[in-house]
Amino acid sequence: MKHPHFEHVREHLERVRDGYAYIPDPDQVYLGRQEEDHFWELVGLRLQGCPVVVLAAIRFERMDRKGVADSRASLAAYLSTPAPDSGEGRRITALLPHKNQSIPQFLMGLRAGREFAPVSIDRVRVEVAFDFRADNPAAVKDLRDQAAPLRNHYYRTTGGHVLRGESHELKPVEGSEHRFVAVRSPEQLLPQGVIAMPTLFVAHRFVSLQVDVTTEAARLAVRNWVPFLPGTASAEGLIPMGRKRKAG
Image 1 (cartoon, rainbow, N blue to C red):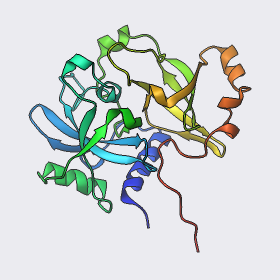
Image 2 (spheres, helix red, strand yellow):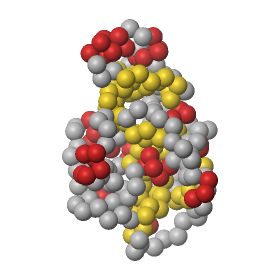
Image 3 (cartoon, rainbow, N blue to C red):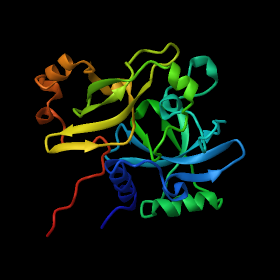
């Protein structure tokens, strides 16, 4: 039996593999309840202590971004622990779909005003996050133009996953002990092959090794470094969806 939550993630991974440029119907994929200054959106979370990906609706403050529908802060900023004097805590409130409920049904119920018992998620226990959009909901051209250029990196996580993609350097930020790095156009290297993935937001403390491979010399060198070889990588997906049952 196919699990509806995992099927929703697989469909998104297929869109990524096919070079998706937009989401045809956000109401079916990620948009939930709309409020005056906030809205609820479906995101995927890899949580410490949970063997499978968790799909959860999280309440975001709406931002005014010209040309970007339902703009909000990036997941990297949202999930990072706030400064001690900000008045915000480590925990965030989320709504979870029923185990046998399809995600479009869950989102429709949210928009219809159905009440769900909230759960509390510790930001520090989030290892990886992703959303179901095809663009950056916090994109602002002026800020993007001023930002430092993205560079190519390889990562190895504390779970043994090997990942490559475009990102900025991992740098500590004053006032927060738990930060995330956004990895654009990521690919996971597994012993059995390479998988294209959506933009990932990876917790700094989940990264055990990092190397900048923007230069040709570094790209050639990393192919000979044991920790970054596919053969030494975890065979588990960075977005875990459980083991497939054997037939028979």
